[in-house]
Structures are given as structure tokens and as C-alpha cells.
Image (cartoon, rainbow, N blue to C red; front, side, top):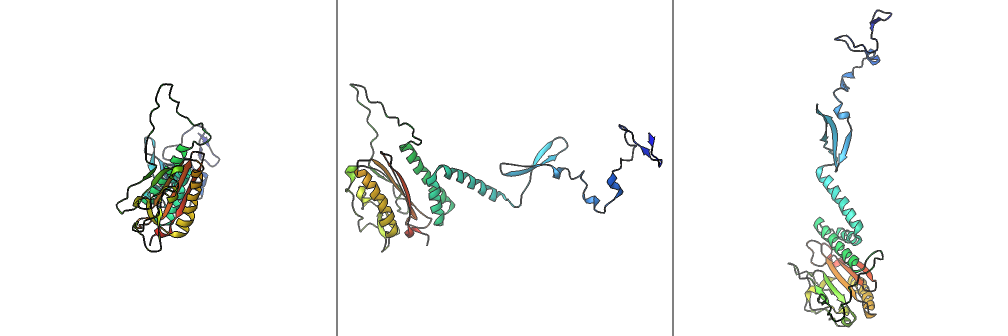
Length: 298
């Protein structure tokens, strides 16, 4: 062991320090009264890397045998908030793929609807998107047509259904979605709203509005086709202009798959809005959400 000029032992490379003594650090010549607060040997676990997996934050801890991940509770992000943020991300991705869903969810939120009602509105929009995508292929995809029956054979009969297909009334007597296949012979066969029919929430000053329009064959006596609407601009302006455009296309010979869906807010009998869609055999694709002030929460 070599000697320093002052008589202290100096360690040579590879030589261990004598028992009971540790190699001095140049910083120990300047002791600090706060030094005991920063014992890094005991704080190693808290200095390790933190990672986030599935919205939960973990820190790496040495348990004596291996490094393990231990959950870290974040007081600024309680579990309820994390769950809400996850749902918001899922809903955003869903509405990005279904544009009508985003529109309906926004309308429901505008009328103060509950989360359950907004989810139902979003699913109704997804249904409308699905109908539009099934009837008219996107991206110019070729349409597959059934092969004609061979000579001497009879083609299988197609699925028969009514041209107008209303939903049944719910427990409150409210009308639901009405679907229809509009063809030229149906023009002018509808009936005006019967004065003795009172759809839920009807009062003087409101209209008994057709979900499936009268000019396309809609009934004014069937309560499954009637809802309480604000005359203007809901029934006689926005809905009427949409219906006239569809009637013009049907009159020209186009076959149009038509649907009308009333959207209800909790505790309010008239619909807060009406979703109208139309998909035609000649490429028509139309959709409109018409707000109905008569159905706003009171």
C-alpha cells in the first residue's frame, strides 16, 4: 500500500478499502445540514421510470428479486374520470366512422338529454349510416346482381314486405321510426292529419306532423305516423322541403328507401328532433336532422 505525503494510505487500483472505512468522496469535505434528507440509496425506487399502460400509471420497484410494476394512484385522475375519458375516446372514434351518429349525439346534447339518450341517438345514427352504406356501395364498388334464371326455370320469389313500415307505439304512446319504400304509384295517396288524433304532447298551436309524408302516401289517421311538431320552421319549412325533394325524385321514376326517426328527450312527449334519411336507386343520398322546439325540455 502506497503512502501519501501526509502519511495517509493511498489505495492502488484494484485494492479494496480497509474494513470499517469507506472511500471518501470529494463532496464529504463540505457537509450540509440537509444531507440526511437526500439519501439516494433509500430513494432508488421512487426515482425509477414510470410508465402508463391502459390509462393506469405504474412505477418500477425492486422487490429484492426482480423489478416489478406497482400502480401509482394519481389524485388528479380518479378512476371515474379515467373511465369517462376512455368512453369519450371510444365515442369519438365511433362517430368518426359514422357521421350521422355525431350529428344526432350533438342534437341530443343540445336538448339536455341524458347520457343514455345520447348513446341511443348515436346508435340510431349508426343504423342510418349502415342503411346508406348497404344500399349504395361506397368507393365505386361494383354492384352484384343476381344471375337470371335459366331457360325453363322459375326465379325464386323475392322478399315481400309492406311499402310503409311504422314501428309500434311505446309505453307513452310515442311514435317510433318509420321506414318506407317510396315508388311513383304511392304519390298523392296519403291522408291529411285527422283532427281527432292527438299525438303525445299535442296542444293548440302545434301540428300533427307526419313522419312519413302525406304526399308520398303517409297516413294522417295512424298514430304510429304522427308526432307533435312546431309548425314553423320544423314541419312546414325544413321537413316539407326535404319531402318535396324526395317526391320530385320519386315522380321521375326513382325508387327511394325513406326513413324518419323521432328523437326524444327524457320526460318530454314531443320529439326534440327528427332524423330524415333517403337513399335512392339512382344514387340519391340525403339526410337531415330537424330540431323541434316543441320537444325541448321544459
